[in-house]
Image (cartoon, rainbow, N blue to C red; front, side, top):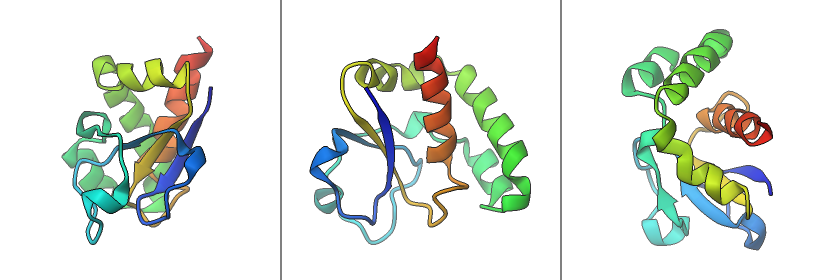
Amino acid sequence: MSIGVRRVYDKPAGSDGYRVLIDRVWPRGVSKKDAKLDAWNKDVAPSTELRKWFGHDPAKWEEFKKRYKLELSSNRQAFALLLEKARTERVTLVFGSKDEIHSNAAVLREYLEQELAK
């Protein structure tokens, strides 16, 4: 169906469908109850090393995307359930970053959409 992205700090919407947190670290200031998640998939998040290297620096964005997609391609089992869900229902990738454009959610969404198109 479709894949959306939403910050964990934004109010969940009824149209979100299957909501999954895709960060390795739980976001500050949000309770599990308020997040209204169906799952927390730490394994699909960028590695700690890659996340720290990137540091949300837009100048490193293109290289971050390449490196993160390489990590994803070597760990297909981490996102297999997301692909399965996205084939039949709306999936919303939930993340904590302030920058929606330069986030792991944006890269993962693009990656999953490419996988779905195959």
